[in-house]
Image (tube, rainbow, N blue to C red; front, side):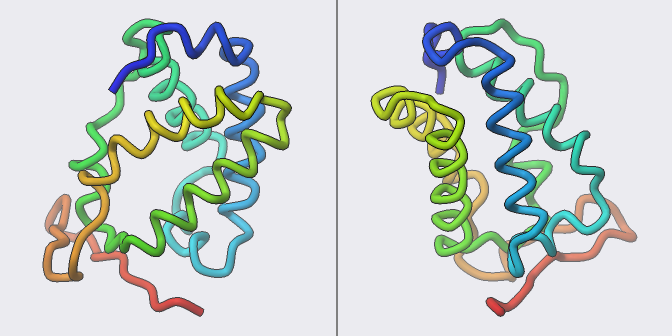
Length: 140
């Protein structure tokens, strides 16, 4: 899903970087969500998420990473996890001073990928490569 004017409307890449820094600070501290990021450098994922959203907000096709479904296929992401992540994202966007109407447009883009990430059971997960582990963590 794309919203070709949203990047400009929210204040450009600098605002996305600020939001994603705050967002991932919260995810990396969260007792449940942080487990999905144990071996991922935070700055790397912040940059990837920023590039991904810039590409979906009218900033050109700068994202060079994998498609959400492929890169998350080894993660058991439930509806509850996805909704929690969305709540934290929304809080982060608002905390950075983005207007409510723009927040809803941002969340709409982000939520468009939900069907690619959420799985009905851990059995729906697939390893990305032979030595990969399926990431599934009970709610603390």
